[in-house]
Amino acid sequence: MPRLSRLMTRGALCVSAWLVSLSNHVSAATGFDPVAATEAYLAKMSPEARARSDAYFEGNYWLILINLIVSLLLSWLLLKTGFAAGLRARAERWASRTFVQTWLFVVLFSIVSWALNLPLDYYEGFWREHFYQMSTQTAGAWFGDKVKGLVISLLMVPLLVALLYAGIRRFQQRWWIVASMVTPFLLLFFIVLAPVFLAPVFNKYVPLADPKVRDPILSMARANGVPADNVYEFDASRRTKRVSANVSGAFNTIRVSLNDNLLTRCPPEGVMAVMGHELGHYVLNHVHRHVVYLSLLFALGFWFTNWFFHFALARWGAAWGVRGIGDIAGLPLVGMGLGIFLFLATPIRNTIIRVAEVEADYYGLNSARQPDAMADAFLLLGEYRKMHPGKWEEIVFFDHPSGYNRILACMRWKAEHLDELAAAKK
Image (cartoon, rainbow, N blue to C red; front, side):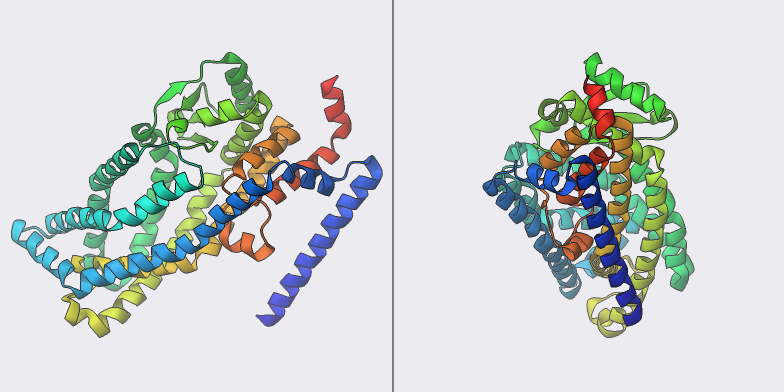
Protein backbone atom coordinates (compact mmCIF):
# COMPACT_ATOMS: atom_id res chain seq x y z
CA MET A 1 0.00 0.00 0.00
CA PRO A 2 2.79 2.56 0.72
CA ARG A 3 4.25 1.82 -2.71
CA LEU A 4 0.83 2.26 -4.31
CA SER A 5 0.39 5.54 -2.44
CA ARG A 6 3.76 6.79 -3.70
CA LEU A 7 2.87 5.81 -7.26
CA MET A 8 -0.47 7.63 -7.01
CA THR A 9 1.24 10.73 -5.61
CA ARG A 10 3.81 10.71 -8.41
CA GLY A 11 1.04 10.25 -10.96
CA ALA A 12 -0.90 13.18 -9.53
CA LEU A 13 2.22 15.35 -9.66
CA CYS A 14 2.84 14.34 -13.28
CA VAL A 15 -0.74 15.20 -14.22
CA SER A 16 -0.47 18.56 -12.45
CA ALA A 17 2.79 19.31 -14.24
CA TRP A 18 1.23 18.37 -17.57
CA LEU A 19 -1.76 20.64 -16.95
CA VAL A 20 0.51 23.55 -16.03
CA SER A 21 2.55 22.87 -19.14
CA LEU A 22 -0.64 22.77 -21.21
CA SER A 23 -1.81 26.09 -19.80
CA ASN A 24 1.57 27.69 -20.52
CA HIS A 25 1.52 26.31 -24.07
CA VAL A 26 -1.95 27.71 -24.69
CA SER A 27 -0.90 31.05 -23.30
CA ALA A 28 2.15 31.20 -25.55
CA ALA A 29 0.25 30.07 -28.65
CA THR A 30 -2.84 32.28 -28.35
CA GLY A 31 -2.05 34.98 -25.84
CA PHE A 32 -4.90 33.71 -23.65
CA ASP A 33 -3.86 32.34 -20.25
CA PRO A 34 -6.53 30.07 -18.70
CA VAL A 35 -4.98 30.33 -15.23
CA ALA A 36 -4.90 34.13 -15.31
CA ALA A 37 -8.46 34.19 -16.67
CA THR A 38 -9.57 31.93 -13.83
CA GLU A 39 -7.96 34.19 -11.24
CA ALA A 40 -9.72 37.15 -12.87
CA TYR A 41 -13.06 35.41 -12.43
CA LEU A 42 -12.37 34.66 -8.79
CA ALA A 43 -11.46 38.33 -8.30
CA LYS A 44 -15.05 39.23 -9.19
CA MET A 45 -16.04 37.94 -5.75
CA SER A 46 -15.39 40.45 -3.01
CA PRO A 47 -13.12 39.38 -0.13
CA GLU A 48 -16.17 39.51 2.16
CA ALA A 49 -18.18 37.21 -0.13
CA ARG A 50 -15.27 34.76 -0.41
CA ALA A 51 -14.82 34.72 3.37
CA ARG A 52 -18.54 34.16 3.95
CA SER A 53 -18.65 31.35 1.37
CA ASP A 54 -15.57 29.66 2.82
CA ALA A 55 -16.93 29.88 6.36
CA TYR A 56 -20.29 28.49 5.30
CA PHE A 57 -18.83 25.54 3.43
CA GLU A 58 -16.16 24.73 6.01
CA GLY A 59 -18.90 24.72 8.64
CA ASN A 60 -20.46 21.82 6.75
CA TYR A 61 -17.36 19.74 7.56
CA TRP A 62 -18.17 20.01 11.25
CA LEU A 63 -21.86 19.44 10.66
CA ILE A 64 -21.08 16.05 9.13
CA LEU A 65 -19.40 15.05 12.39
CA ILE A 66 -21.99 16.76 14.60
CA ASN A 67 -24.86 15.01 12.82
CA LEU A 68 -23.14 11.66 13.36
CA ILE A 69 -22.51 12.34 17.05
CA VAL A 70 -26.08 13.52 17.66
CA SER A 71 -27.49 10.52 15.79
CA LEU A 72 -25.32 8.08 17.75
CA LEU A 73 -26.13 9.76 21.05
CA LEU A 74 -29.90 9.75 20.46
CA SER A 75 -29.85 6.12 19.29
CA TRP A 76 -27.81 5.13 22.34
CA LEU A 77 -30.24 6.92 24.67
CA LEU A 78 -33.25 5.22 23.04
CA LEU A 79 -31.57 1.87 23.65
CA LYS A 80 -30.04 2.60 27.08
CA THR A 81 -33.26 3.96 28.59
CA GLY A 82 -35.26 0.98 27.30
CA PHE A 83 -37.42 3.28 25.18
CA ALA A 84 -36.95 1.14 22.05
CA ALA A 85 -37.78 -2.08 23.88
CA GLY A 86 -40.81 -0.44 25.50
CA LEU A 87 -42.02 0.86 22.15
CA ARG A 88 -41.73 -2.65 20.70
CA ALA A 89 -43.74 -4.06 23.62
CA ARG A 90 -46.46 -1.47 23.02
CA ALA A 91 -46.61 -2.37 19.32
CA GLU A 92 -46.91 -6.04 20.26
CA ARG A 93 -49.88 -5.24 22.48
CA TRP A 94 -51.59 -3.27 19.72
CA ALA A 95 -51.19 -5.84 16.93
CA SER A 96 -50.82 -9.61 16.69
CA ARG A 97 -49.05 -9.84 13.32
CA THR A 98 -45.30 -9.25 13.36
CA PHE A 99 -45.38 -7.23 10.14
CA VAL A 100 -47.97 -4.82 11.58
CA GLN A 101 -46.04 -4.59 14.85
CA THR A 102 -42.95 -3.55 12.93
CA TRP A 103 -44.93 -1.01 10.93
CA LEU A 104 -46.41 0.53 14.09
CA PHE A 105 -43.01 0.66 15.78
CA VAL A 106 -41.44 2.50 12.84
CA VAL A 107 -44.31 5.00 12.65
CA LEU A 108 -43.91 5.92 16.32
CA PHE A 109 -40.12 5.76 16.18
CA SER A 110 -40.04 8.06 13.15
CA ILE A 111 -42.18 10.68 14.89
CA VAL A 112 -40.02 10.58 18.03
CA SER A 113 -36.78 10.77 16.01
CA TRP A 114 -38.17 13.66 13.95
CA ALA A 115 -39.00 15.60 17.12
CA LEU A 116 -35.64 14.89 18.78
CA ASN A 117 -33.71 16.00 15.69
CA LEU A 118 -35.81 19.13 15.15
CA PRO A 119 -33.51 21.53 17.10
CA LEU A 120 -30.44 20.56 15.04
CA ASP A 121 -32.50 20.62 11.86
CA TYR A 122 -33.67 24.14 12.74
CA TYR A 123 -30.11 25.34 13.30
CA GLU A 124 -28.78 23.66 10.18
CA GLY A 125 -31.67 24.20 7.79
CA PHE A 126 -33.07 27.56 8.90
CA TRP A 127 -30.98 29.65 11.31
CA ARG A 128 -27.66 28.93 9.64
CA GLU A 129 -29.06 29.47 6.12
CA HIS A 130 -30.34 32.91 7.17
CA PHE A 131 -27.10 33.77 8.97
CA TYR A 132 -25.13 33.18 5.76
CA GLN A 133 -27.75 35.02 3.68
CA MET A 134 -28.81 31.98 1.66
CA SER A 135 -32.43 31.54 2.77
CA THR A 136 -35.50 33.57 1.88
CA GLN A 137 -37.92 31.37 3.83
CA THR A 138 -39.95 32.25 6.92
CA ALA A 139 -39.83 30.06 10.01
CA GLY A 140 -43.43 29.01 9.47
CA ALA A 141 -42.80 27.95 5.88
CA TRP A 142 -39.67 26.06 6.94
CA PHE A 143 -41.60 24.19 9.62
CA GLY A 144 -44.37 23.45 7.12
CA ASP A 145 -41.81 21.83 4.81
CA LYS A 146 -40.52 19.74 7.72
CA VAL A 147 -44.05 18.53 8.46
CA LYS A 148 -44.58 17.66 4.79
CA GLY A 149 -41.33 15.69 4.83
CA LEU A 150 -42.45 13.83 7.95
CA VAL A 151 -45.80 12.92 6.39
CA ILE A 152 -44.12 11.63 3.22
CA SER A 153 -41.65 9.59 5.25
CA LEU A 154 -44.47 8.10 7.32
CA LEU A 155 -46.20 6.98 4.13
CA MET A 156 -43.09 5.25 2.79
CA VAL A 157 -40.45 4.46 5.42
CA PRO A 158 -42.50 2.26 7.83
CA LEU A 159 -43.56 0.00 4.96
CA LEU A 160 -39.99 -0.28 3.61
CA VAL A 161 -38.56 -1.02 7.06
CA ALA A 162 -41.29 -3.58 7.76
CA LEU A 163 -40.37 -5.34 4.51
CA LEU A 164 -36.68 -5.14 5.42
CA TYR A 165 -37.27 -6.74 8.81
CA ALA A 166 -39.43 -9.43 7.25
CA GLY A 167 -36.37 -10.28 5.15
CA ILE A 168 -34.06 -10.07 8.16
CA ARG A 169 -36.18 -12.52 10.14
CA ARG A 170 -36.28 -14.95 7.24
CA PHE A 171 -32.64 -14.84 6.16
CA GLN A 172 -30.98 -13.92 9.50
CA GLN A 173 -27.20 -13.78 8.86
CA ARG A 174 -27.65 -13.34 5.09
CA TRP A 175 -30.13 -10.47 5.32
CA TRP A 176 -27.55 -7.94 4.20
CA ILE A 177 -27.12 -9.82 0.90
CA VAL A 178 -30.86 -9.68 0.21
CA ALA A 179 -31.00 -6.00 1.21
CA SER A 180 -28.12 -5.31 -1.17
CA MET A 181 -30.02 -6.95 -4.03
CA VAL A 182 -33.09 -4.79 -3.40
CA THR A 183 -31.15 -1.53 -3.00
CA PRO A 184 -30.69 -0.79 -6.76
CA PHE A 185 -34.46 -0.77 -7.30
CA LEU A 186 -35.02 1.59 -4.37
CA LEU A 187 -32.26 3.90 -5.59
CA LEU A 188 -33.78 3.98 -9.06
CA PHE A 189 -37.08 5.05 -7.57
CA PHE A 190 -35.69 7.75 -5.29
CA ILE A 191 -33.20 9.15 -7.83
CA VAL A 192 -35.26 8.87 -11.02
CA LEU A 193 -38.94 9.00 -10.14
CA ALA A 194 -39.14 10.67 -6.72
CA PRO A 195 -38.16 14.11 -8.10
CA VAL A 196 -41.08 13.89 -10.53
CA PHE A 197 -43.72 12.80 -8.03
CA LEU A 198 -42.47 14.23 -4.71
CA ALA A 199 -40.86 17.55 -5.70
CA PRO A 200 -44.27 19.15 -6.55
CA VAL A 201 -45.23 18.69 -2.89
CA PHE A 202 -42.64 21.32 -1.97
CA ASN A 203 -42.58 23.52 -5.08
CA LYS A 204 -44.99 24.68 -7.75
CA TYR A 205 -44.00 23.48 -11.23
CA VAL A 206 -45.34 25.32 -14.29
CA PRO A 207 -44.38 25.10 -17.98
CA LEU A 208 -41.74 27.68 -18.88
CA ALA A 209 -43.61 30.35 -20.81
CA ASP A 210 -40.80 32.38 -22.40
CA PRO A 211 -40.10 30.85 -25.85
CA LYS A 212 -36.77 32.69 -26.07
CA VAL A 213 -35.50 30.57 -23.17
CA ARG A 214 -37.63 27.43 -23.61
CA ASP A 215 -37.12 26.74 -27.33
CA PRO A 216 -33.28 26.78 -27.33
CA ILE A 217 -33.30 24.39 -24.35
CA LEU A 218 -35.65 21.99 -26.12
CA SER A 219 -33.60 22.26 -29.29
CA MET A 220 -30.44 21.37 -27.38
CA ALA A 221 -32.27 18.50 -25.67
CA ARG A 222 -33.45 17.07 -28.99
CA ALA A 223 -29.99 17.47 -30.52
CA ASN A 224 -28.54 15.43 -27.66
CA GLY A 225 -31.15 12.69 -27.69
CA VAL A 226 -33.11 13.75 -24.60
CA PRO A 227 -36.81 12.98 -25.24
CA ALA A 228 -38.26 16.03 -23.48
CA ASP A 229 -41.16 17.98 -24.97
CA ASN A 230 -41.42 20.73 -22.37
CA VAL A 231 -39.39 22.71 -19.84
CA TYR A 232 -40.71 23.40 -16.34
CA GLU A 233 -39.97 26.25 -13.97
CA PHE A 234 -40.29 25.86 -10.19
CA ASP A 235 -40.47 28.51 -7.48
CA ALA A 236 -37.30 27.94 -5.47
CA SER A 237 -36.93 31.67 -4.75
CA ARG A 238 -39.47 31.51 -1.94
CA ARG A 239 -37.04 29.25 -0.10
CA THR A 240 -33.49 30.02 -1.23
CA LYS A 241 -31.26 32.16 -3.46
CA ARG A 242 -29.51 29.14 -5.01
CA VAL A 243 -29.70 28.40 -8.71
CA SER A 244 -30.43 24.85 -9.83
CA ALA A 245 -31.84 22.71 -12.63
CA ASN A 246 -32.27 19.02 -13.37
CA VAL A 247 -33.40 16.38 -15.82
CA SER A 248 -35.51 13.82 -14.00
CA GLY A 249 -37.88 10.96 -14.66
CA ALA A 250 -37.88 8.01 -17.01
CA PHE A 251 -39.79 6.94 -20.11
CA ASN A 252 -42.80 9.24 -20.54
CA THR A 253 -42.13 11.06 -17.24
CA ILE A 254 -38.84 12.66 -18.39
CA ARG A 255 -38.86 16.32 -17.41
CA VAL A 256 -36.40 19.20 -17.82
CA SER A 257 -36.74 21.61 -14.91
CA LEU A 258 -35.02 24.80 -13.78
CA ASN A 259 -35.70 27.08 -10.87
CA ASP A 260 -36.78 30.69 -11.06
CA ASN A 261 -33.49 31.86 -9.51
CA LEU A 262 -31.63 30.54 -12.54
CA LEU A 263 -33.91 32.54 -14.82
CA THR A 264 -33.60 35.79 -12.87
CA ARG A 265 -29.92 35.59 -11.94
CA CYS A 266 -28.43 34.28 -15.19
CA PRO A 267 -28.63 35.59 -18.76
CA PRO A 268 -29.97 33.25 -21.48
CA GLU A 269 -26.41 32.10 -22.24
CA GLY A 270 -25.94 31.11 -18.61
CA VAL A 271 -29.22 29.21 -18.58
CA MET A 272 -28.13 27.29 -21.68
CA ALA A 273 -24.76 26.48 -20.11
CA VAL A 274 -26.37 25.13 -16.94
CA MET A 275 -28.95 23.13 -18.90
CA GLY A 276 -26.19 21.68 -21.09
CA HIS A 277 -24.59 20.37 -17.91
CA GLU A 278 -27.88 18.85 -16.70
CA LEU A 279 -28.57 17.24 -20.08
CA GLY A 280 -25.09 15.75 -19.85
CA HIS A 281 -26.08 13.81 -16.73
CA TYR A 282 -28.91 12.20 -18.68
CA VAL A 283 -26.98 11.48 -21.88
CA LEU A 284 -23.97 10.07 -20.03
CA ASN A 285 -26.22 7.75 -17.98
CA HIS A 286 -24.93 9.08 -14.70
CA VAL A 287 -28.07 8.04 -12.84
CA HIS A 288 -27.60 4.40 -13.76
CA ARG A 289 -23.91 4.57 -12.93
CA HIS A 290 -24.69 6.12 -9.58
CA VAL A 291 -27.18 3.35 -8.89
CA VAL A 292 -24.51 0.71 -9.54
CA TYR A 293 -21.76 2.39 -7.51
CA LEU A 294 -23.98 3.43 -4.62
CA SER A 295 -25.57 -0.02 -4.49
CA LEU A 296 -22.11 -1.55 -4.10
CA LEU A 297 -21.32 0.99 -1.40
CA PHE A 298 -24.55 0.19 0.44
CA ALA A 299 -23.84 -3.53 0.14
CA LEU A 300 -20.60 -2.97 2.02
CA GLY A 301 -22.49 -0.77 4.46
CA PHE A 302 -25.08 -3.47 5.14
CA TRP A 303 -22.30 -5.99 5.76
CA PHE A 304 -20.62 -3.58 8.19
CA THR A 305 -23.96 -2.90 9.90
CA ASN A 306 -24.56 -6.63 10.36
CA TRP A 307 -21.11 -7.04 11.94
CA PHE A 308 -21.55 -3.94 14.11
CA PHE A 309 -24.99 -5.07 15.30
CA HIS A 310 -23.80 -8.47 16.47
CA PHE A 311 -20.68 -6.93 18.05
CA ALA A 312 -22.80 -4.52 20.11
CA LEU A 313 -25.54 -7.07 20.78
CA ALA A 314 -23.09 -9.51 22.39
CA ARG A 315 -21.99 -6.81 24.85
CA TRP A 316 -25.04 -4.71 25.62
CA GLY A 317 -28.03 -6.41 23.97
CA ALA A 318 -29.39 -7.98 27.16
CA ALA A 319 -29.27 -4.69 29.06
CA TRP A 320 -31.01 -2.91 26.20
CA GLY A 321 -33.73 -5.57 25.85
CA VAL A 322 -32.81 -6.34 22.23
CA ARG A 323 -33.48 -10.00 21.42
CA GLY A 324 -31.59 -10.35 18.15
CA ILE A 325 -31.06 -9.04 14.64
CA GLY A 326 -34.73 -9.60 13.78
CA ASP A 327 -36.00 -7.60 16.77
CA ILE A 328 -37.35 -4.22 15.66
CA ALA A 329 -36.23 -2.78 19.01
CA GLY A 330 -32.71 -3.02 17.59
CA LEU A 331 -33.52 -0.49 14.84
CA PRO A 332 -31.54 2.29 16.58
CA LEU A 333 -28.55 -0.05 16.64
CA VAL A 334 -28.93 -0.73 12.92
CA GLY A 335 -29.06 3.03 12.35
CA MET A 336 -25.88 3.49 14.38
CA GLY A 337 -23.98 0.94 12.30
CA LEU A 338 -25.11 2.33 8.95
CA GLY A 339 -24.51 5.89 10.12
CA ILE A 340 -20.92 5.15 11.14
CA PHE A 341 -20.23 3.45 7.82
CA LEU A 342 -21.69 6.27 5.72
CA PHE A 343 -19.66 8.79 7.73
CA LEU A 344 -16.45 6.88 7.01
CA ALA A 345 -17.46 6.46 3.36
CA THR A 346 -18.00 10.22 2.84
CA PRO A 347 -14.92 10.64 0.58
CA ILE A 348 -15.96 7.64 -1.55
CA ARG A 349 -19.53 8.84 -1.96
CA ASN A 350 -18.39 12.37 -2.76
CA THR A 351 -15.87 11.14 -5.32
CA ILE A 352 -18.49 9.04 -7.11
CA ILE A 353 -20.67 12.11 -7.54
CA ARG A 354 -17.83 14.56 -8.20
CA VAL A 355 -16.41 12.54 -11.10
CA ALA A 356 -19.80 12.57 -12.81
CA GLU A 357 -20.09 16.32 -12.25
CA VAL A 358 -16.76 16.88 -13.99
CA GLU A 359 -17.98 14.87 -16.98
CA ALA A 360 -21.25 16.82 -17.08
CA ASP A 361 -19.31 20.10 -16.99
CA TYR A 362 -17.37 19.15 -20.11
CA TYR A 363 -20.54 17.91 -21.77
CA GLY A 364 -22.21 21.23 -21.02
CA LEU A 365 -19.26 23.13 -22.47
CA ASN A 366 -19.33 21.11 -25.68
CA SER A 367 -23.11 21.28 -26.11
CA ALA A 368 -23.88 24.88 -25.06
CA ARG A 369 -20.46 26.29 -26.05
CA GLN A 370 -20.73 29.12 -23.53
CA PRO A 371 -17.55 29.00 -21.41
CA ASP A 372 -17.86 32.52 -19.99
CA ALA A 373 -21.53 32.13 -19.13
CA MET A 374 -20.81 28.79 -17.46
CA ALA A 375 -17.97 30.36 -15.48
CA ASP A 376 -20.34 33.11 -14.31
CA ALA A 377 -22.81 30.43 -13.18
CA PHE A 378 -20.06 28.74 -11.19
CA LEU A 379 -19.45 32.06 -9.44
CA LEU A 380 -23.08 31.97 -8.25
CA LEU A 381 -22.49 28.48 -6.88
CA GLY A 382 -19.47 29.94 -5.12
CA GLU A 383 -21.86 31.79 -2.81
CA TYR A 384 -22.17 28.60 -0.78
CA ARG A 385 -19.24 26.44 -1.96
CA LYS A 386 -15.62 27.17 -1.15
CA MET A 387 -14.04 28.35 -4.37
CA HIS A 388 -10.41 27.27 -3.99
CA PRO A 389 -9.88 24.45 -1.45
CA GLY A 390 -6.80 22.30 -0.99
CA LYS A 391 -6.48 19.11 -3.03
CA TRP A 392 -7.33 16.68 -0.22
CA GLU A 393 -10.00 19.01 1.12
CA GLU A 394 -11.73 18.78 -2.25
CA ILE A 395 -11.35 14.99 -2.44
CA VAL A 396 -12.82 14.41 1.02
CA PHE A 397 -15.54 17.03 1.34
CA PHE A 398 -16.64 18.12 -2.15
CA ASP A 399 -19.37 16.24 -4.04
CA HIS A 400 -18.88 18.75 -6.90
CA PRO A 401 -15.61 20.09 -8.28
CA SER A 402 -14.45 23.28 -6.62
CA GLY A 403 -15.38 26.56 -8.27
CA TYR A 404 -11.75 27.21 -9.13
CA ASN A 405 -11.33 23.91 -11.00
CA ARG A 406 -14.67 24.30 -12.77
CA ILE A 407 -13.87 27.80 -14.00
CA LEU A 408 -10.36 26.69 -14.97
CA ALA A 409 -11.91 23.93 -17.11
CA CYS A 410 -14.10 26.58 -18.80
CA MET A 411 -11.11 28.77 -19.51
CA ARG A 412 -9.08 25.88 -20.91
CA TRP A 413 -12.00 24.99 -23.17
CA LYS A 414 -12.23 28.65 -24.22
CA ALA A 415 -8.51 28.75 -25.01
CA GLU A 416 -8.95 25.91 -27.51
CA HIS A 417 -11.95 27.58 -29.22
CA LEU A 418 -11.00 31.25 -29.39
CA ASP A 419 -11.35 31.52 -33.18
CA GLU A 420 -14.71 29.77 -33.15
CA LEU A 421 -16.04 31.96 -30.33
CA ALA A 422 -14.83 35.12 -32.05
CA ALA A 423 -16.52 34.08 -35.29
CA ALA A 424 -19.79 33.40 -33.47
CA LYS A 425 -19.84 36.97 -32.15
CA LYS A 426 -19.55 38.50 -35.64
